[in-house]
Length: 132
Image (cartoon, rainbow, N blue to C red; front, side, top):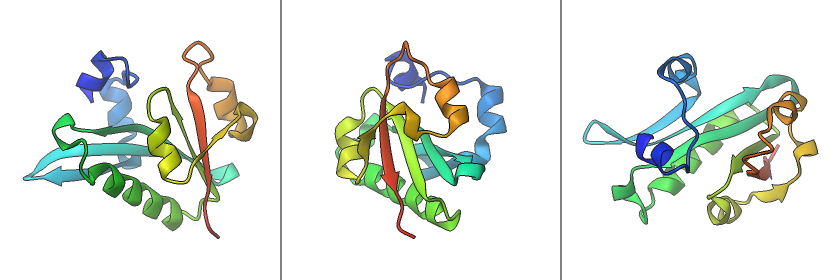
């Protein structure tokens, strides 16, 4: 994650934060190295999930690793019986649109996430309803 944090493409998260949220994450490995990961934060009351910290090692860009990572997230969301997922991103627009997300508005997010939205960062909201 660190190279993407340094570029400003990914928010910095402390070791403690990541340790507390480790169960949120799905991983893809190659030769026992993590090459891609993403978190899926749950908003149980609303049956929503938030994709965050979606990152693929640069050596694996332009491969199918991003798709595989998204597939893992979708499978987890389905297993959790979520009705919708969303992501906030400044840089991943085409990627999310290719995976069936649409641009959304802040009012479509769970209330607690609306309150914590960083208006200065101005991330685009991508939403996807999940099949039931």
